[in-house]
Image (cartoon, rainbow, N blue to C red):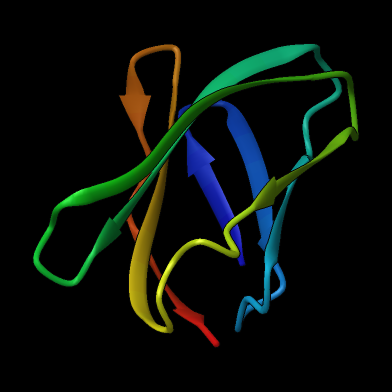
Length: 89
């Protein structure tokens, strides 16, 4: 699932998530971003800052989250992306 924050572009996969969520920097620049994952009651259950090289991929272990529906968003340069719905199996 692609996400954009201003000029930055990221890809989150797989969806549904088993244990690990991968975040890919689709930019040609080194970037730093924050990712937030919220449950269906809008409570932030995961937050982290990630640094990327161009086309770099970071892996986030989400095995501690209960199965269900979550919403992920990225904040880069103070600009939040739209939230995307993700299923955790």
